[in-house]
Length: 58
Image (cartoon, rainbow, N blue to C red; front, side, top):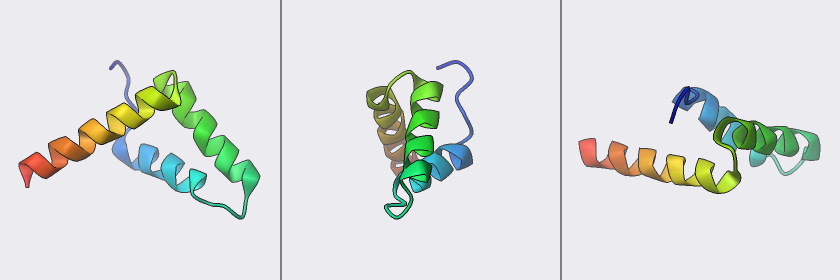
């Protein structure tokens, strides 16, 4: 994937989505992931692959 955001930024967007008390924050985090990856499905696939790669290195 070209110009993938840094892991810390992806983690921030996922954290934003988990903030159930603030719908605006949740929406912004989701939109940032969609803008970066093209869809939520692609973002999820990227995150899952990153986790698998991280676990394999451990």
